[in-house]
Amino acid sequence: MSETISFEPRHLGEASLLGDLPDQLPDNLPAEVRQQLTHQLLEQQGFVRVRELSERFGVSTVTARNDLQSLEERRLAHRVHGGAMPVNAARGERPFEEVATQHAAQKAAIARAAAALVSNGESILVDVGTTTAALARELIARTDLTDLTVITNGIKIALDLEAAYPRFSIVVTGGTLRPKQHSLVDPLAAAMLQSLNVDTLFLGCNGIHPETGVTNINLPEAAIKRTMIDAANRCVVLADSSKLGVRTLAQVCDISDIDVVVTDSGADEQHLASLRSQGVDVIVC
Image (tube, rainbow, N blue to C red; front, side):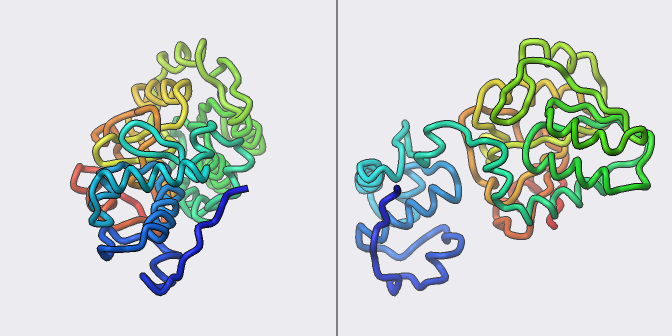
């Protein structure tokens, strides 16, 4: 059970502590407040850098490292080179069913907006993930859609899409099963994808950062995602706002490889502006 660091919220006000953290915070915060906010930032972003903490809190990098060390000793963070990640992330990815319950309303809104981008007669690739699974349900609900070819590496997604047969032709990539995500990866999956030329890819991810691009928490799925991008004429990334500004273990692609990002209204305006400045069409729902 995680330890809770106790402090008085009067230092910053309850709204700051419960909502998204600002880029800069007051100087001279007590160590326990700084560490609580660092822990909150970790949970929001999935990763924090020492330099980022130094700038946000107006402290030295040594102090920022000491804060992370304190959190690690309390089992609230896992130190890595240059920063830290949440303990759960360090232990590995969470099962599909667990992740599906998080940000569910935002994922549903993103899925509806993404489904509106699909036209009759198209061929689409649907990546594995909880938001793309929501997209599959929204595609099924669009009874006007016909003659749609859907290729996916998600077993659960394929089973859900069966409800739209014969309006949709459903193709599964094949490959090796990853049970936690119900996904199919190499060997074999890439060989099938390399033979395709589809209209649109709907891509899931664990993070989008202006410097490191799209990232994912595990290496096998990141490799398949890269192959999917190469097979598609358009790449649409589905990412709720908690994933913007986040970078995780494996890079999938650069921002320049993305055509569209669909996210929710909780997204930070700076993150959205950065994506738009790099030529990405951003849809906020």
